[in-house]
Length: 259
Image (cartoon, rainbow, N blue to C red; front, side, top):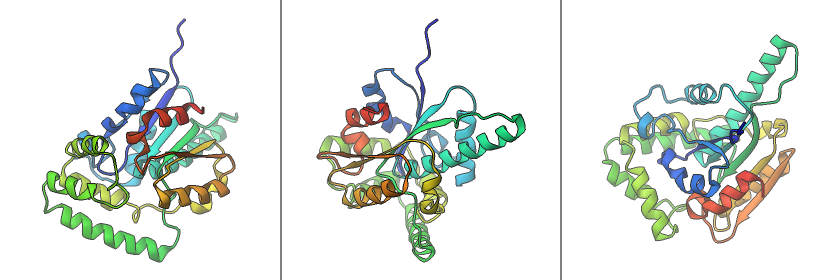
């Protein structure tokens, strides 16, 4: 009997779609059974409502409801969601254990977080970010997707991407709609999601924190996370910026495989 490759869930960032993982999937050479869904507010899921963390977690837990343990990999917004999903899957496991009176491993066996953090810990700062995100969502609703895609590419953390990476990211953003992205910003933005800083010590799965050498902000965040996580590995990719999976898909594939 031929064994199935292990499952891998790939969660894209804000303004991207599941197609943004094509380079990583190609680099893995079918060693995983990759699932790269469009998250609510994006791409083919742009019209789904509501766009909330709870609704997205329900989508994802349904997608991976049965089968062997999986690796979860997320970039930026997708990384924050991946963290919440890991806790949600652990909670589901605990409830099943209580019913079945036997121990079952968590459905999530490994996390790979790319340019991602656990949210904003300070309530005041989080509220300020939520206000800022709301202003941007309102502006977004008055723009074409082409206009917003060009504006988002000038975000400081993305502005130094290589030209070929920037072009591919732009084409991926055009798969979205302003209305969908506005809903995602309101429901899944950094200001909308609760902080998980105080829960990192509870995470009982190995975590690879992948950051680009040029991504100073998230390198510092990853270093702080590594100090709190029970089992963390910090992977700094030389020469890369924020979107490491787009700039160095082979290195991300290696991190997913744990090598």
